[in-house]
Length: 525
Image 1 (cartoon, rainbow, N blue to C red):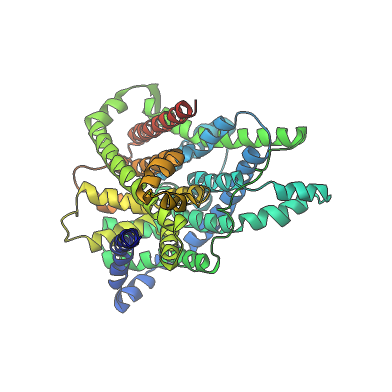
Image 2 (cartoon, rainbow, N blue to C red):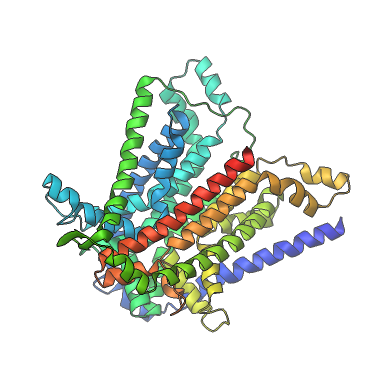
């Protein structure tokens, strides 16, 4: 018993030290660069206050729209008995398989001055500016909110609804009295996750922002382009505010009840009108996702968009000659390392927090879920400052580490919720029978959660393939990830080649999704 307790304590200390050196200390080191003079210089600059205002207004508008649209989509698939749910689910998460800058390019292709729909429908106005940022941000963040809502709706207990129906409580009252309180924690988490994603993304505002500059584009310009790390640290401190607020809210609203057993899942229900409305809404959302991606993909076959629409394959050959294939192999290496390491670390942390109670477990849980709110730009800059003189700086390992930390929270929560539904007495039974905890994990628990492990690996891999935030600071001259070619082609106005790179990333991520689905079906057959 003492040996097992000692082993667990060693693992806990190792995990705590890892988060200390890979999350807390880099952030503190970045904040330590802020001086009163540097703070006053940045805050008093003519670009700063307008950037703050634009970030807040576009972020809040896009976040509210995203949460409403994603909740409705999740409700249609989880609560209404419609067919084709697998197809709709795939469509809804499609935007998370490509970089955010691709969504912005897609909007320009459709609604720009010479866009397909602009010319077809004779539209007036401009996609550039406030509403362009909002539209691109909604597309970019929609899949994350949808997955969070769909995941939690799957685990809601239906006995309360059955009792409410017997008592004659109307559906609307059931929704406000049962569903919304149950969703409170997830709604708060989704709000801060989506708001942080939108406010810290620079791909969309860089492409369709026009004269509307945000804090993310200002930080990218200061820290990445001008290497003004002191000014970038000031902006990074402001971008960290949502993470701090989210941390405080998590402290005040601890997890309750969502890890409990579900005795009777909620069954989809609804009449003909509900089905028609769900189908119509799902189709509209699917088209809204497909059109920008498809339109942007088509221009890679145009000789020169929008001047010469004649068919050509030259842009594909040019992109490959400029190293797109080699960059893709580099990205695969980054994604594979982040996927393996991130999945193992997330499993260990989730096991410690879901299967072992105590103050330490609560602390690891808080830092794990709060990492979701740490912007990629901030994490990248903090890593540059903290690891600059270390042996891993400028190597593949540092980028894999940054990606693992950047995307850690969602896979961790996947495993945390899954382990909460595994019989909590397994380890005690094993101890009674003389079977060690490690054997119980290896022989009993891991087989039960293998599909969640696959989902975790896929999440790390897909996001590592398409991210351009943290890696824009950390990527060495060689090997660079393929996603950074998008910014390079965008700066050179080579839109057609950027479209090819986007579809290259999308193709790899879709292939991984297909392989994962096939493995799950084969294992369940």
